[in-house]
Image (cartoon, rainbow, N blue to C red; front, side):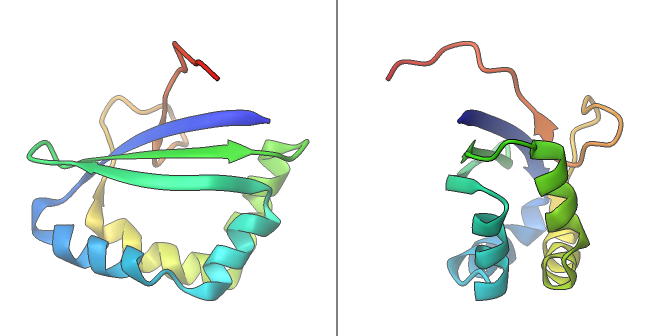
Length: 109
């Protein structure tokens, strides 16, 4: 199992919309998340900085393949097309990232 943390900005004028969307995530999107071996997925919002922090556990064996599977799913693509205009990716993210991956520097079980 791998723990993953990621961060992205949230446009201030889109906070209410983003919360509304995530209060009722589409069932097909949730099913795809599970099918791609993601568990314990949470997104946190820090205001007034308007940063979203996501955390999840990856329980699969090929993260890149599972993420490609998710990205190829038409319903997930539709979901992203609704959510992405709310988000403001960090200028410091790595090439190819939307959400910026974070380094885990501490863990206690």
